[in-house]
Image (cartoon, rainbow, N blue to C red; front, top):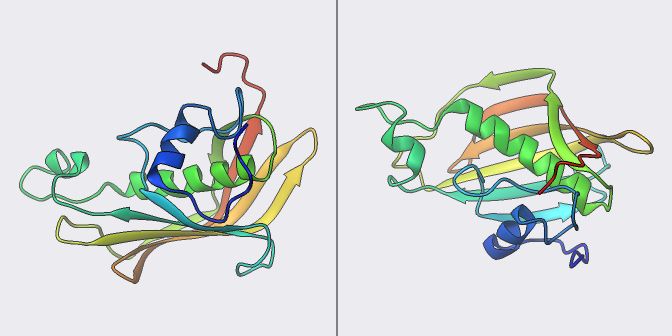
Length: 173
């Protein structure tokens, strides 16, 4: 396991995580492109954040050639809201793996989600932030946090009580 709890991660690090090389076999992985929804993790800390229990931030560079703009929607391209939500779950699962907790990550739900904007092809940068509210690392591994998605500095999605668990998954490749 090559994870040394760095405070930021490059695109190459994220790809290694998707291959199971960052946290070890059977542990948290990020999805591979094109489902990997960020290009880098810019900050991860076990403390800090809005609740003092940890924070993780990431960014996606936007360009008009991103795969989802080609199909969602024809003549009216916009990033699907579900992909921004999935990015927040991806980050929460990464955070749990980063803490050293074992298991494969699975999204378990959220409290509320509000969309107040959209990601269009002319945007430059999508930023994600998850503020941890609770991390349980016993027989049950569970992370709960509040998240935001911003485009070019403006918050456009707000999610409360995002939940991700880590589970023993013997079918992990």
